Image (cartoon, rainbow, N blue to C red; front, side, top):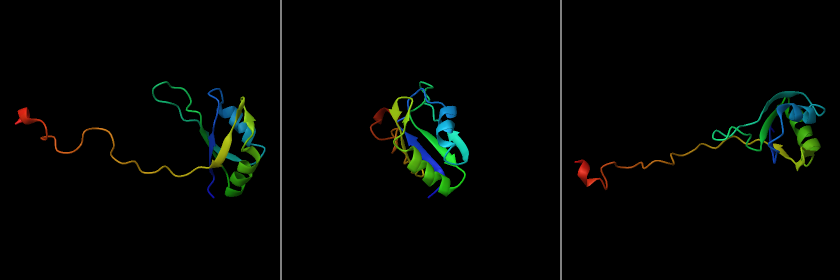
Length: 103
C-alpha cells in the first residue's frame, strides 16, 4: 500500500480545502492535487490525496470511500502508477510513402 489515494466522482465545485476537511480527521495529509483540464481550465472530476503513512491511507479509504461530498458519492482507492504511454498520434512511419510528388 502506498500513501497516495485516487479520489473519483468529484463535483467540479470540490476544492482542495473541502478535500482536506474530509480527509484530515482520518490522518495527516501530505498533499492534495486536483488536476485541471488543459482546454477548459476546469477540474477533471478527480483528485489525488497523499497521506503521511500507508496506515493513514488505508484508514482514509475505509472512512471516506462512498461518502457524500458536494452532492456526489466519492470513490476513494489506492492510486496506481501512471502507465507508460506509447507513441500514438501523428502519422509516423516512412514520410516518403504515398507522397510521390515529394521526390
